[in-house]
Length: 637
Image 1 (cartoon, rainbow, N blue to C red):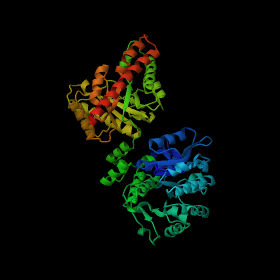
Image 2: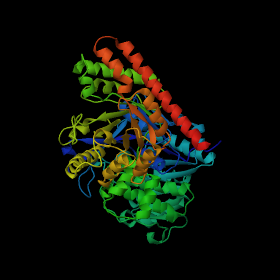
Image 3: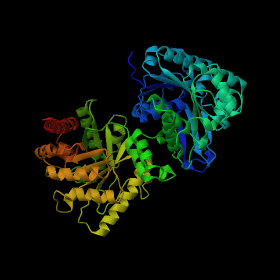
Image 4: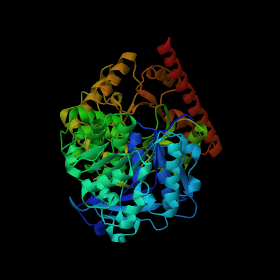
């Protein structure tokens, strides 16, 4: 059978609730960030970020937290074939915090949790046969039922020619050796645990642990003796993690000193958060191991991934992409607090964004002033009309393709609520309509309102700016955009910046490119640009070059409509579609203008308005698809 997976991890899967405040007790935490967690789950995501084809074998509950884990794994490109839904048990939770440089409180909520109900019946031979390696972690050897599942998976893996690895991952309170308040505890001696572990060690080709974890596996607190005791049970390569002293690999006999093992380069960075560091280390190690790298190279990957983990908030969100890792190796440690290295953080953000929006058709109905000025319009009627706009957008999408909407939260909040979870790209404006210099609404003077936004919302901001604006105007607008961009990133949202220089001054083929460069020069890096249709290929090429030379990892550009006639838009699409950086369009009044005026006056009903907008939107989609196809033919001709 073809090996279409590089590895399958088995075991814990939980939701981590990480205290947002740093330097305080869990008792005093006011808010939490939600991430996926559990060692095997972290490793599956961490290795996927490094380019491996990863899968997870576990159970989650039949509730929102279980669905969150499944959906997040899909976003991380982890195969979820082996993620079983348990209808009777809840998904495990972990509450974590960063209290001090050496205190990281941790509470496990795992009483009769879903992942500890993993059974032999969940281990499908055909699934295991797909993998080049199977990776187990220690916790699932602590319970008879989960141990049987792990042993079956390991046995099948060996029968099908796969490698096997163990991350000892010793948590004493998950073995019933410590109380609920001892989640941070890393070592309690136990003959029973040692015996259990030693009964499985022969099954592995790679065994990884801290010194304390080898102490429990070897039955002694003398690390060299513990390694030798493990070696007596297994021919596996042993990788011993030594904290700030790095790690050492032992492929054969255990020497008298840990310093005699094979090592990789370390990275002198500030330790901010040790939670999840071992899973990051394991992810890098597995990447090297499965790529047939030598142990110094594999340990280089592992040490670097561990360094990222200890320098950032959270576990999985901290792990690097493969591209990010290469940038780090090339640059070295520029800032010991890696989370404060702005260039590296930008690479981290841009290379770990999820979702494929490479071909995007957006119905924009975030308009406020234009609708408020229509005869018969009231806030209530505008809100109801925006729900009709959403209906039209969903009708055109019909469950397929990459479609989106732009909708505001002041007049269109009900439409935004209905759009949640529909698979749409959702942009939401923050600018005060028509303001120049730029002012914002909805999110408050401190931009704190962004904390209330769903993660799927993209922050859209329209800024009327022109290269010839005076210095004071530019300074004012850049200050607002800088604060906004920082707040957007802090809230883990994407940022779309719309600029329309033609509304405030004359334009030529250099104008838009000049605006873009001024914004990048202020170190503002939007995920998306929304630009008006350029008048020539030359203007488009200059605008795209201005973006690519400053941010080669941008999401791309969507073309706006400016209430242009459909025929003019088709011509604009023809030019825009020739640029690979242009991913689609975001058009509004050309779609909804006439139906909105008629509906507000009571001349047509809901169904007629939806039908007209659906036809208008579909016509633009057809025009865009034709323009893109024509552009592709030009490239291949």
